[in-house]
Amino acid sequence: MDARNPGDPATYSTLEAVRRFNEAFDRHDVDGVMAAMTEDCVFENTCPPPDGERYEGQDAVRRFWERFFSSSPDSRFTTEEIFASGDRCIVRWRYDWESGNGTPGHVRGVDIFRVRGGKVAEKLAYAKG
Image (cartoon, rainbow, N blue to C red; front, side, top):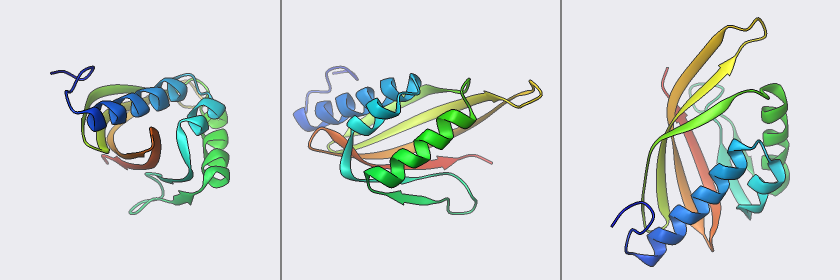
């Protein structure tokens, strides 16, 4: 068993759904990200502290991703670890960016995904710091 073949069909489906989501996300492809999410999707952002903002439904989540990708076109997320069980998946990540003056920065965090019907239904994001 490994991340590509976890043995359990539900876990495999979850990992595949999160993989599709992450591939679109890495391309900053809003249409691809939204195609990987359910109609009633939920996204909870890391900001503003302490609880972040919650977005519900395709329209609200799409608007967030459009703003996010346009405000940080050169940013990137790197998956540091991924594991799943059933319909849940945890991704430990690092987010890197450059500020307007070229100063690099990064933050680490985790996303907790719930998958339903082969698509991401929830993405709850948490960051260190």
